[in-house]
Amino acid sequence: MTNKGETVSPDDKLDLSGVLCPINFVKTKLKLEEMEVGQVLEVILDDGEPMKNVPRSVKAEGHKIIGVEKLTDETYKILIRKETD
Amino acid sequence: MEGLKEQLRKESKKAKLDFNELKSGGFIKQTQKDLFTVRLRCPGGKVNAEQMRKAGEIADKFGRGEIHISVRQSIEVPYVSYKDFDAVAESLREIGWAVSSCGPRLRVPTACAGCTYNPNGLTDTQGICAEVDKRYFGIETRHHKFKTSFSGCPIDCFRTREMDLGFQGVLEPKLIEDECNGCELCVKACDEGALKMDGELPVRDWDKCIHCGDCVKVCPVDAMVSNRIGWLARVGGKHGKHPYFSYEIANFLTDDQVYVLIEKTMSWYQENAVGRERIGAAIERLGLERYMNDVVDPLGLEAIRDQKDRRKYYAKGNFYDK
Image 1 (cartoon, chains in turn purple, yellow):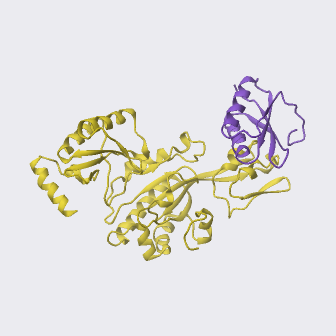
Image 2 (image 1 turned 90 degrees about the horizontal axis):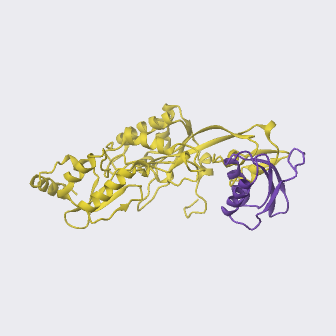
Image 3 (image 1 turned 180 degrees about the vertical axis):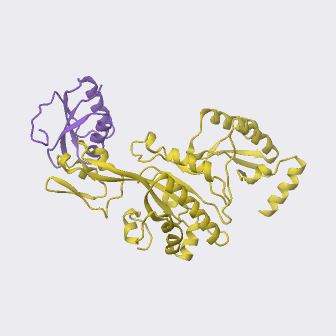
């Protein structure tokens, strides 16, 4: 799943549905810290504040969002590629 | 008020007080006889640790060990006797510090953290605030107080709408269509509903965009980028018993344009206001067109002329007549 049609299988997954800001971002950050540069993390996020904030914070940390997919009316799946340690 | 000044003049002779220390207006009369609150000068609410220690030292030595943080970011030391004004001023001079102002002057500007460490910040509010303080602090208006503030983004924590002259950071986004992957994150990020998808690409309704930059910050592929960053200028606001919300008058000012707008607006206020009216009241009396013609147009600023172009910045759900 990426937006340009390539398929990437994630190296790790995190279901953050029901997790509020900024805990969802902190959990994402901690998980990324355990991973290697170049690996991909799949994160499930609620629509609304989480979708507004988490991708932006992940980007500000220097990582790359390589995919966004709507799962249901309330949840999204995003793919993050770890870019820096 | 005149009586107080006269009394102080007499007393100051007895106490060998330099009356010049009072002119800046940083000593504010308290309810209690002979006691004043000393307002310290803290542009943008920024002080260093040495200044913090000094404020504490003054509170211990000349006050009652208390400090009050004012709504405009000043540190104030209450319960200081007027007989100690000289000693307080001397103590401040030791570290190159000074009292702030009150009265009919351009007040210390206030500011948020801005882009230096706030993730929402678009502009360097602290930098420009320090410069404005350096250039214009304490200028006499001949009429009433004159307040300025700087907010780094449209969340406007520093309430530029309630300032005589307020400046708020704005960002003009631009879409590089070839880079866009159609992920719709920018549409989700936009609180104003200014973006919607048209096929694979987001399209923008500029009548709704308030230039917050959220779409740029969220874009994962750097397709939505910043075309330019600047200041939105507002004039004529105040709080107090009868608050005024200001008018948006010009957009995307550079720092240098902010300085000239302050200078020209101050001259206009000095020349056109009557008595103790604030600039907002002068504009109400003379008409906004007059201010726009006299001040904004000659400076060649990107003027906001029509009320309809201001509407998108308005408060929502207030009680004013529409």
